[in-house]
Image (tube, rainbow, N blue to C red):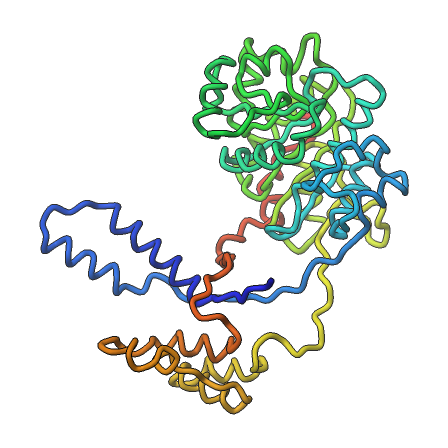
Length: 438
């Protein structure tokens, strides 16, 4: 069953929630001032929009089963098959390209939009390496991959994803080591029970610092500030040295665009220290992801080269030497598009003095009957009620088949252009003082 997306109702829900938040920020004792504040918040114009963007879907590639059949992924990867990681569902083309490059030993920058599956671009090659190692009987404790996040919230989201995929893969271990990670196993178990009532703990998730120090997880999730402490503290030395050392293979920097200026230089120095500590002269595969990049592939790969002090290339005309992977979208169809009106009609509505009236007029001219909520309810149910808001009538004109009272689907609001100003082209310049070997 399909449902109709209702941008107007969804926007109202978002605005109402924000208004409630503003009203709760400052409790005012004086009743008159409190009333005036509430009135001002209620009538203030807090948003513009909604702004809707219709984007074509991403181009599909082959499935995981197809990559296994072609020898790109190890046959042992089949052990990860589940409803959370189906083997026969096609990957996006950029996911396939990233997997092929990483499994071939190349460093990669994955630059695609939010919700495009960047996580799979680095997780699946890492899982492939761990699965192959397990099949050879060589998978013991010890860090294989560092997943570095700019904030704990992103690491927390990744932990939830790992719990889903690795629920039936006990031989791959993972752990989140951040500031609020409990010290002992008992504290960690108690905290997990409180935060996840009724959910069993996975045996392959290490929840405490003590557990991770004793048997370092294969996937270590942390943030760049905590990584600095881990490299300094003697109590955490077994994550990098000792009986379980010598297996580091991957360094992943998620949301790489947030590292600019001094922060980028600090992270670059930190990654050099880490590599000198764990690599022992062996190459590490470096992966950066971001939804916000510049338009120049050479600047992007130059930024990544300076950040990791590792080889990143962009050779025009040679796909095997292009280490920037970007999403490819399908061509827009010829139409007709959603709704009874074409794009030119919506432009005329936007320019009209009374957009609501113009919408109703054009909808009627295109053969869509405009219903009135009062007529639908009947005279008995409308006594004493104000007329239906004009946006509700407009909504029904655009979506005449919509079931009255149907709830909206989740809305994804468009990012402000200002949020994407940290392009890689600027970051590469900000890292220019950093030279390999420093």
